Length: 380
Ligand code: NZQ
Ligand code: ZN
Image 1 (tube, protein in one colour):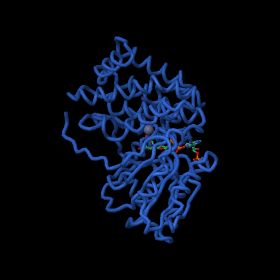
Image 2 (spheres, rainbow, N blue to C red):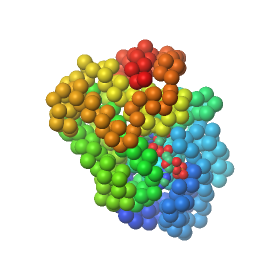
Image 3 (spheres, rainbow, N blue to C red):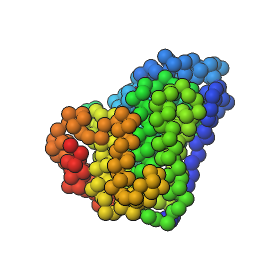
């Protein structure tokens, strides 16, 4: 096991009716910004629950319209509001995009220089951020209990991530009932994104971390069991609750402590969203099997372990086939052709991006532009 530091400061308020608890956790002596997305929270009653919980707060401001794959340009409008109103706390209510936007806004407010620099430096050197709390309405990203944020820039078609211990939420409300109104496609995306988060921290090479392996396998087994149930029965509280908690545990730092990590599927996937607008999870389902095939020899031992323990199959090849079958069973395409994307063009554009940035991906840090292009070409 590798050395690690583990700290997760986020308080989780899980279960029915827990939005009512936020009032006591939000400072009453500072103006608060309620940040939300395109309006789903107004249609499903979450907004009303939040307003009721904060009815006695003397200075509540709002900013709506954060888009899926939140834009830098939109976040910067919110930064102006935060500065103008001397906001001291941001409450993000929505999916991962709203939470990520809140983290970026919180970091940008007191940042010296162009805040895009926060993303270019991936959060290194960040000195301060406003505190944030969240009410999560979409289980998927794990943003509710981590220090990561992913922001896109329309102008340059870029999508970059940053991470900092300063932007872990102070608290996050996870009430499964707030997710009952999710469209089937978003539930599918959430199951797939959570599954991928586990795999990025697990599918590398054996590293003498038996507990982390069992945790990871437990999370994916739960997703495989409860995913299809919650997809078909959106109002079934218990399966939705199990899915919601799995999504948080998939990326709250626990399963990744002390183990090698990959993240190349996410790295390549972000480029597919930036260039072609695919949903985050859609990109991952295309790329993951490609990464596994490309890195087959190096991941073989772990693929075999996963195949044996999770799917009851004997070979690494069968483990990949089972995974693709699972993704497809959720209604998730696994090929670029399903989106009518020209594979050569995509490989070329993404190769150029990685060459320009000098990024290297993978648990060995040696997946460069050429390998990335090969992976993409394999996903026609
Ligand atoms: O905008 P509104 O109207 O709220 O609608 C949203 C949005 O259209 C809707 N929605 C959310 N909750 C709902 C609901 N509709 C009905 N009922 C509800 N209860 O769902 C749509 C998608 O929302 P979004 O927040 O974009 O989805 P998700 O949570 O999948 O977040 C995706 C973003 O997170 C980033 C992705 O790259 C992408 O930008 N990620 C963040 C990570 C992190 N912070 O750790 C890790 C991930 O790997 C990922 O990269
Ligand atoms: Zn993800």
